[in-house]
Image (cartoon, one colour):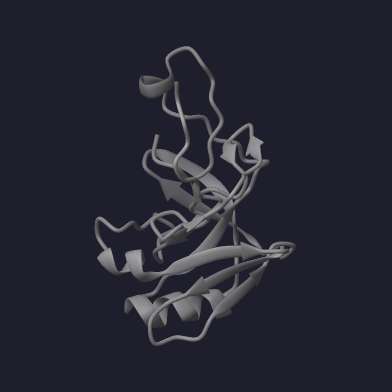
Length: 147
């Protein structure tokens, strides 16, 4: 018998997630899980492996807003209905387009993490499949998760 002890959503790849009582399951996983990602000036993803301070960035989704928080900074609110310009990004070996969440989010992240960074959102039209090394013959959709 399997029982779920806790359930967490991580809206921004490599940032702190938050506990939920329930979650909607979509083709690419839990709703909003790893739907956003932080990229450097070249569009390449950054994670806690290189920036451990990402673990201090809190995330939550309340209504139609993504909230980010970090020690010493005010809260950042990113509307879920925002449609920023498309920009090329790289996550592992995958190159795809994502929606840029704007200069305010970029400045907030860059200030906290001490280098030029941008927040991007997964573009469902781009599509991304999980690595077949992990899924075999199953074509499993994903967003910005690792595998």
